[in-house]
Length: 393
Image (tube, rainbow, N blue to C red; front, side):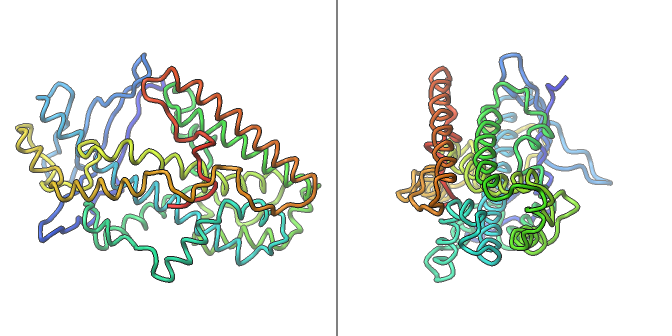
């Protein structure tokens, strides 16, 4: 009936755990069953922390009826796994690295006078700047995280390879992704509500610009620069994932608009929905432990001492809070979606489309503000005034 959901962290199974200050850290690959309650809450019903192994005793199922400390520890393990995938899969791979693929392909394949270049480059601005600074040694890499997270050393790359190999085109497009995950009718999923509306506003903006330059589907098919750009993203940047829905060519105006919308939404709304909540949800360490110092429990006799011995040390927790503050705070270079100062289009037609885009964003922003007044915990992460115009940090 659309009320049962699962959160499956199988990507973490077998990933090498970190060694921090000569102490082995630990990872789990939980499977969580959740039930949608009549009041809209999505609550866990059962937690399995490890995948079953052939020839081994089945892992225990942790339940809300277990002793409170045992259930608490199981939930902390799930949240720690969520932290690992949030930062490496959702944030780094699906945000920053995807934006880098778009940026490189755009600079290699589209001249600055091309309409798609003008349309998309404001949303790639910081990606290109950070890339240049990183190449010059001005931006640190994952070394800081190696000091604090459970996934360490070669585990980063192993996890990114696994996650990249499962990346699908539909998962980057909210209308398809939310339908696939059964979230369209979940009224308490404010991400779903706001992502769909923001996607539609961006789509109308993209269509408005594209319709000015491509009057027919043939015009799209006959644009070699546009086709090379699409092929560069799919075959070179993403290593040819045609079997996962990514197109290698654009055959119609509708297909081209959908592809460009995906690129812009990924670099704006999708990244912001992952990025902006970090300070709110990850600075309370038990809600998102960066690392776990004891192995996942295999029995139900945990005590509060077990919980404290498993959670990060004070030093690790302090470092996590510091990193999360740097990541989650409002950035001084932040430019809201649609408010870029660069005027890539000079003619009246595109300017009118951009004006309409900004007006629609302002309406959505106000409607989200009004809705949030009635929520115990406001959902702010897709408010257009807070969504960054491109991936910044």
